[in-house]
Amino acid sequence: MPGPGYWITTYKSISSPDKLAQYAKLALPAIESGGGRFLVRSPAPNAVYEAGLTQRTVVIKFESVEKAVATYDSPAYKEALVALQGGCEREIRICEGVE
Image (tube, rainbow, N blue to C red; front, side, top):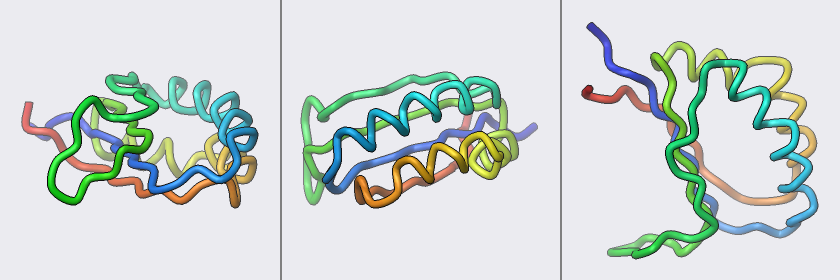
């Protein structure tokens, strides 16, 4: 049986806190309606090792990888991405968990 899906976002830089705030207002309901549950929403990690950055980190758990991908591809989340455009540089990974 496949494990849960984890959506992991690490921010490299935030150039517009206003755009990030507008994105958050739209992204939160889009992610929650897709079944996402926030596990980590940290403005900065508590400890960073090796080549890590001390920037915002977010981890969201979904029932499956497919649900996480469907949420990312949803019209509601795409609207949030438009609001964020040019406001930050980040990386998103969606991975299957081992639970």
